[in-house]
Length: 348
Image (tube, rainbow, N blue to C red):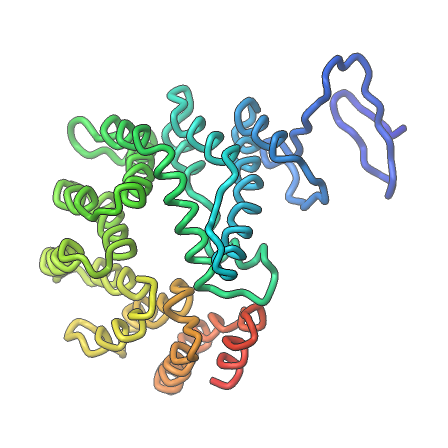
């Protein structure tokens, strides 16, 4: 067999065998513990094994990785099901493992919040590998979020209440972790309750930018047409009108609102009095965020998002070629799109 020094296995050949003795039960392997090796291992684990690691591993990175590895196939399947018009489902093992970790009060709130952050739409697209439909990816992921929210609604209500800060705002790690878990609970409640009321109340009650912007983002992305969202966006602009960096956030938040109306919204914001095409930060906040961080709004099937970007690049390039080049890198992944969108992107 291979060489062993203490508890280190030396992998020196293309094929090696290590034999362990004295093990009474079938083992479940926990690899790359503590993020010990930045490598990808071709190793398939069953959902049951991943759920076991997620529940019992003493290494928190391994627990998080197991949950991520459990989530990815569910999310890719959800995207395929949404694309084919099927009902989206989710493996109960994933939902149970997520809710168990989220409800484990022995774990730090920051870790529990990280556990609840499902892989992004970009992560799902990379995992699918090609022929991607951004709308189906978004629809599938949204459906999974709702399934988790529905299953854990009582837990998320408890966490949202328990994680509220007592006393003055604190920037320390513990308080930041509690805010993160509270925000995660609020997100799932928005999907479960399908109402903007709780997020609007959180926006009104927030005494710090973290919770204020998280509540506003949730309102804008989950309930774009709600009167609560319109009011919150107007309030945010009025409150921070004199702070350019915060106004950049206001533009970015709206540039990333998903759906068919995204392009019209971005075009309207270009005509907003606070938009300045000569300010690189403002251009990045609106045009850049639309192209980089709005998969459904930018990757329109009719190609209008790509043509809009091409026009913007032609305007930006003479004034700031570095900025134009940076924003144009948002088109790097066009070959991974399904044929209709890929053709539109190439022709733009």
